[in-house]
Image 1 (cartoon, rainbow, N blue to C red):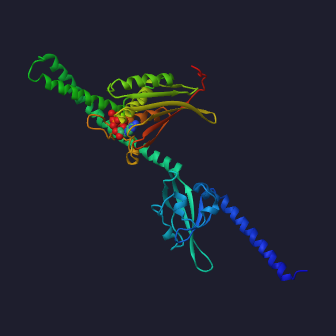
Image 2 (image 1 turned 90 degrees about the vertical axis):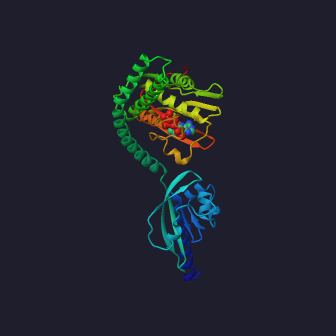
Image 3 (image 1 turned 180 degrees about the vertical axis):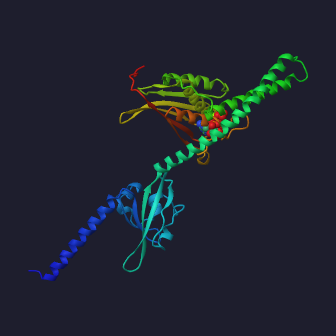
Length: 376
Ligand SMILES: Nc1ncnc2c1ncn2[C@@H]1O[C@H](COP(=O)(O)OP(=O)(O)OP(=O)(O)O)[C@@H](O)[C@H]1O
Ligand SMILES: [Mg+2]
């Protein structure tokens, strides 16, 4: 018979092992990545969620630096407050951006002290990317709505005097001799006034102060893409080689929508794509379908291999008057109008871009009634 003390020790060991097992299972059950790091950023513990982000096993993470494992960096992440957290008991959470997987995390930290007084920090990374996107979207919508109001008021005021300039210059042109000294000057005035008028019209369309009668009818998106493409290529220089690749595969491609406004959406996207490929290149347009529970969606992707958009510009492209084009080449209203129309039609538009690689706009339209148009 083993002495009573040995038996008690065995029980204690089993009890401690069981506690350890339960503890490890508990931290593995946490869906957010979690690590325990020392002041030198070395990981001493990690959960399964962290091993998934790192793309390797928990064992391989231990003793590595947190920034290497989590963000594939050679130095601590920007905005990391781990050092500060190891000095105080309670630290407010902070946000970091992980370039490795293009996601935003809110980091909650808590200082730990072991029996010998050594300090480490528990860090839990909550993925905030979707919430942040939604927040940005809402802020963007609010901003666009107030700019729209301002722009609409301004356009409305300008419209009348502009109409006067246009009408009087046209009357003068009719009465002047083409060989007259000032004929060409008045032609210039008339051209400039026409250009201003088209800007004002765009502004009014953008602000939607002009009563827009929704003209809802069945619209075949595949046909509309092809006709918009023809219109968008009209003004292109014949010398530049632009190739177009259509991959129109969506089985459901008829929407109950506004044909003219949809045409405006695609003409703007196609024109921008061609302008981004000044030396020529390929524009691809593809369609597909998607269903979320009972709701069907028609998805359209417009992708070019043009100059791309920098991350700093990417957040501004839907703002009215944001343009990187030379004066006279763009007013910066195209995408803001596209954005407004997509909102009115209950759709969404997203963009992804890489400098010198190209840009892809992804549009999603809710399909109100499922329709059987496959094989059309
Ligand atoms: N496909 C694209 N590739 C690269 N940059 C783009 C693309 N689409 C839009 N952009 C950028 O977004 C800006 C805003 O586009 P938007 O269509 O609103 O205005 P614009 O083309 O400059 O002028 P407008 O359309 O009023 O003539 C552009 O100036 C350009 O910098
Ligand atoms: Mg444009």
